[in-house]
Structure formats: structure tokens, C-alpha cells
Image 1 (spheres, rainbow, N blue to C red):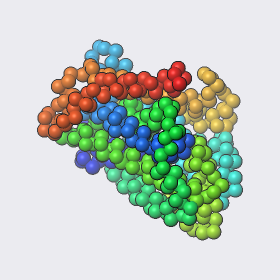
Image 2 (spheres, rainbow, N blue to C red):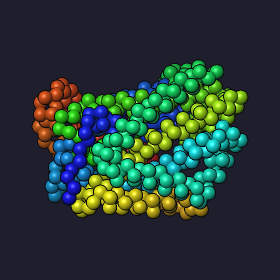
Image 3 (cartoon, rainbow, N blue to C red):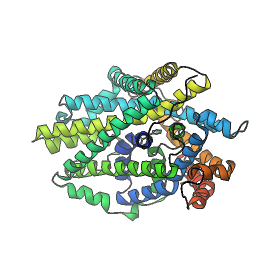
Image 4 (cartoon, protein in one colour):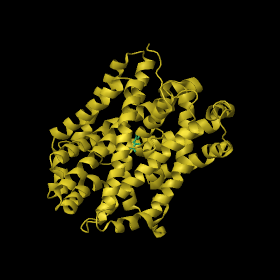
Length: 453
Ligand code: PHE
């Protein structure tokens, strides 16, 4: 068996974890949710969810991973041998594998849009909805793009923790943050962008109902990569002096800043172009934005070309760093549990995800009519089961596990590094895990299943 790997530096720990959190959820899903749920009021509730539920759950995953220094499945087995809790370890590993199968499809789309942007085609698209539909419905191109991004992710993971995940997170995350900063400035300088800023900053509390609160919670968990085994696996590579609460706080801060910045990029741009509406739904970045690029920059083609390239490069980088964290839990599990070589374990995960990802990719084209379970296509099924079922179930189990099952002293020692780091909010943290988080997540879960409204 290979010697167990570790992240080499604190910066590496933060950037790798932030790389996991910052993903399509921030740049693609967050602005969509803000658009659909009434702007600033949604953002306020989202921030509350991140602070009150997201950070405590992230710390809990860190506790489990760092305490055991094991892959997620074996970590639960070590902490609670021969109990039903072990199920959560396997669920975490399985969930991450499951997400990778469809996340890689959307990541593939970002690659295609980046290449089209480089070729100058994005800002020249006449009918972006038809372009998107035509592309996703064709059998080969989306598939090739999905396989290409999977191979990029594979290439990093096969190199291991320090020479792969850490090194490339340290390269990609600063580039991603730089692109965001440049795009925010560009978007602000577009005429009519004040309207978009007003939309982002003026809270419309009349829109706030239970469904908005629940959407905000769901979005916060997805965006912070909670309950998928990813953060737990990364934490198993943390050094013993890494400060868990501070790391979780930094990751949540970076993740939320990137999400809000993405809103800053998208809404001023969208509002500066009167023809498009902010609540355009999930097609926002693939359908609405090409229109924005075309209308806004029609007269200044070079800037439009550059803006589009930077935007889709941003999406691709965000998707890739998240994919790395979704690949690693299963790879680490195969590698350690079955004592495989890293190369072998990585190939098994990559090839199996590609095999299943093919079905998800084709479900926009040749397999669009293949529906099962509530009339969902393969893609919808994978999205629904992972984000709406495994994620909340995992969140509930993790909070109960760390709140009730794990020894209080073990948890305290882990979050304070054996008493060396002050954490006066420990009782509040435990209260959240024992009561607030399980109850709140159960509500999201039941709401998403339509059991309560
Ligand atoms: N947090 C990532 C995003 O915002 C998605 C993700 C989910 C990553 C689950 C890892 C695990 O896109």
C-alpha cells in the first residue's frame, strides 16, 4: 500500500477545499436562483444558511476526515465500528461517484462554449436557445467534451494529493479569482448596469416564503460541497495543526464571495441588455449570456470576444476543481480499501463515470425519450437523486453523527487541536448539530419531495 498522502501547506488546504466548493453551483446555479427568487432578499437568507448551517456541517466533515486520516467509508467504520453509521461512509463515496457522472456533462458544455468563444462564435450566435438545444441534442460533440474534461480531471487525480490536487488547485484558484475580478469590473462598466446592481442590492421581502428559504438552504449545501464525502476526504489529508473552524470559515467566505461576484458579473450585464430577463432559469449562462454578449458587444467585437472567453474559462476552471474533489473520494476508497495503485483506482473511477456519463449526456439527444421513475431522463434522475435525496439524507446523518454519536471530547479536541485553538462557540456549534441542522435539513428534504409545502 502507498504511504498516505497529505496536503503540504495551509494555503494548499484552503485552495483545494475552496476549489471543491467553488464550482458550477456558484457561477451557474447561484445567479439563476437569485434571479428566480427575488434578488437581495434571497442573498441575505442564503448567507444566513451558510453561516448557521453550512459552516458547522463543513467543520463536522473536517472532524471526521482529519481525526481518522482515512477515506470516507473507512472513516465511519473506524469511528463507529459495526454500527449502522457505517452506511453513511459508503453513501458519501457513492454520492460523489454518482454526481461526477452528470456534473462532468455540464462541465463538458463549458469546454465546448470556451472553444466556441475562442473561435469568436459565441458573440455571433443569432439564436442562442436553438444553438444550445442543437449542441446538447447532438450525440457526439457533448460526449467528446465530457470525456475531454473527465480526462483533464483524471490527469490531475492520477498525480496524487500534493503533486496533483494541491498543485493544480494552487494554480487554478488564483487564476479563477483574477478572472472574476476582471469580469466584475467589465460588467460594471457596461451602460445600464445600475439596474442590475439595484436588483442585487434591493431586498424584496415580499418574495420570501418557505420555498425561498428552502431553496437557499439547498443551494448553500450544494455550493459548499457538503454531505458528498468530498470535504471529509480532503480533510483526511489535512495536517494535524490545520485549524478546522478557520479553514471552514475561509472556504465559506471564498465560496460566498465568488457566488455574489458571479451575480455582479451576470446581472449588470443582463440588465444592460433590455431584451433579456433575469429570471431566465437554468439556461442563464448557456442561453441568456451569449445573447448578452452579442447585443452588448455587437459594436465592440474584440471586447465581446475577450469577455466571452474569460467567462467560459472561469466556468471551466470552477467545474474542474470541483470535479477533482468529486473524483477523489471514490479513488481514495478504492486505493485504500482494496489496496490498489493510485493509477488503477483513478482509471476505474474515470472509466466507470464516463460509461454512465454517456447515458446522462445522451439524455439531451438520442436518449431524450428514455424516461424512467417520474418521467425523468437519465440526467434528471442523477441530478434529482444526488442533489435532492442523497445530499439532505447525508446532511442529516452527518449532523446527528457528530452531534450525538461522537464523543464530545473527541469533537472538542479536533476543532480546538487538542485545546490549542480557542473556540468559545463550541456549545453553539454542538447545539446546531444536535437540533437546528437535523430539523432544518429534514424540512428541506420533505419540501423537495413535495411532502410539505
Ligand atoms: N460545490 C460545487 C459547486 O458549487 C459542487 C459540488 C458538489 C462539488 C458536491 C463537490 C461535491 O458547483
